[in-house]
Image (cartoon, rainbow, N blue to C red; front, side, top):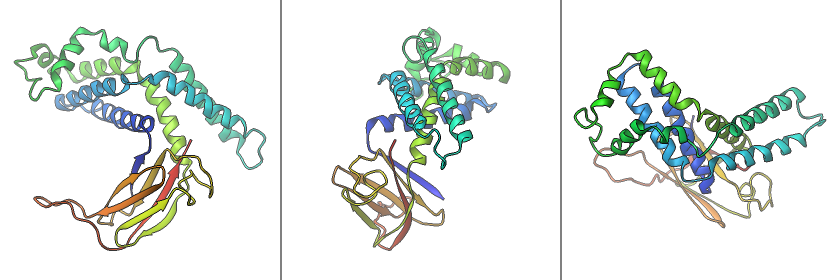
Length: 263
């Protein structure tokens, strides 16, 4: 199955972008090649750029506290596993405590590293990180695998509490949605906001959903495009792109799963 996610507000967009960037940092940092470690650093700089636009730490702390209070309301509920509930509460409390240990602006220790910032200032220029532009960076890329891995671990260690906190929040968001099996007739699907689902789960609920998830079988040869406003959500399925070919609408019925998610 392939899952497509469409966030409905800027806060969730930021969390999803950061999640993808953190995943890239972890992936490329674990590999041994200089090119892969370069990619890890590029993604780390993008984490700084995305997170630096918002008061991310306080947003995460407040959301974790809100989720903690919600979960506390399930205490002594016979339909809820006490072990699972205690585990979720412990995870949230640990993530919150780790966030409180962060001092200053997000990634401040990286921003105070003049050498890293000199690389960051050139790395987004096409070809700006060539060896003749940044000889000291070229030297670092030619150090041993162990030395490069140690440096990347040191640079990312202090921002991991943010990664862990947003991971908890996105996991809770995704688990809140109930999947519905639907069919897009002639590749088109629309749901008005007054229908069951747009409200975040139950019919008649006016709470605005924060994200929609669309799940397709891997064998399905179509790609969803989503547009939404306060009144309706529209899903249009397009045929997969081909070289030298303009995008084309899928004009056959498409079966898919749809879930509206809300914290």
